[in-house]
Amino acid sequence: MASSGTTWANHARAVLARAGHHRGAAREELIDALARQDCAVSALELEQALRRRRRGQRTVGRASVYRTLELLREHELINRLDLGDGIARYEPIAPGGDHHHHLLCERCGQLVPFRDPGLERSIDRLSDRLGFDTTGHEVTLRGSCADCQERPV
Amino acid sequence: MASSGTTWANHARAVLARAGHHRGAAREELIDALARQDCAVSALELEQALRRRRRGQRTVGRASVYRTLELLREHELINRLDLGDGIARYEPIAPGGDHHHHLLCERCGQLVPFRDPGLERSIDRLSDRLGFDTTGHEVTLRGSCADCQERPV
DNA sequence: TTGTTTGCAAACCTTTTGCACGTTA
DNA sequence: TAACGTGCAAAAGGTTTGCAAACAA
Image 1: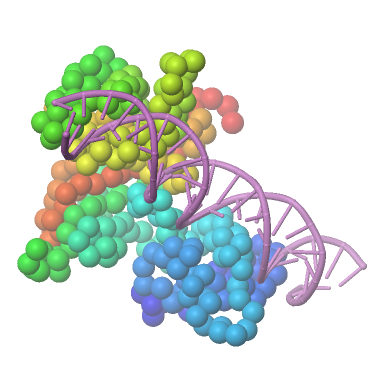
Image 2: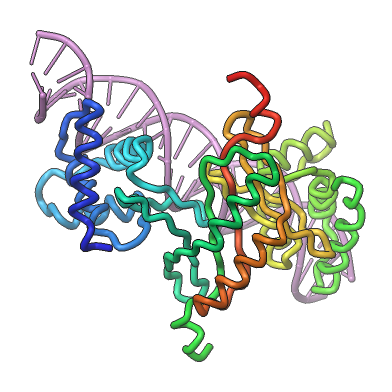
């Protein structure tokens, strides 16, 4: 995932440039920080990651983090997840369309991405049956990841 | 749904009593208010509904609303939904196990509950395949409900 | 009487907004 | 130069907590 980081970052920059956006420093850094992530991160985690990087130098403002995330989301470059704890998490959307969902492990807190064509088919069929015009969907499983099941309680 | 309200309310009271909880006034009123709802409501909507009921009399405190919701959730009497707008919504869980998911209509804002055994089977198979010990799951579709599709844009 | 529940107010935390200053094209 | 982008600080809005009084068992 991290290996495709530069691909995504370049893609994101291209999309924004095409839409007529300037390349401000905060936005550039935030795109890099997002590209570096393995899975979904919160806005405040991103802010801290940026602060850690540039010690002493001028910091990236909190508002810029949120504004950039909103911009990236409008251009469908990132996904926003709400896992039920009141904190929004964001993750890059791969250019090719890497559609996946998440298991939230209630024991170790880890967020585990997974893919399942069968599940996608079920959702498509379901939308048809109910007459919904579905533009998107989210599935979140809660439980224990494979690692945690082997650990004693 | 509203017709099964008393059933759920009684069930909820029985569960809390069995767990050794007292029957305070705020809790009683909140259970009734939840039983009256058709679909998921936010904590603040519940608070307002309670304020409207008892004009002039002592009001139910905001903290009691949140604390009671938390208690009901611990006993799996209500479900908490996070639809991505930063507001948690709550809905009763029917005693028999009325498991369902939601479509959030992006045009009219309505929350439409639906049931789909095929989807549930997909999720069960998926959990098996991935070796997850899944304790719960949520599916949210976004798009247009059947009504809105007939309306001109 | 003893532990639980409650209302109020204040604190908390994430997210948004207003505004003056910098930066990009 | 004219938009656009940025950082700061303050505000907003939902949620949680501390506490003393009220209440149920």
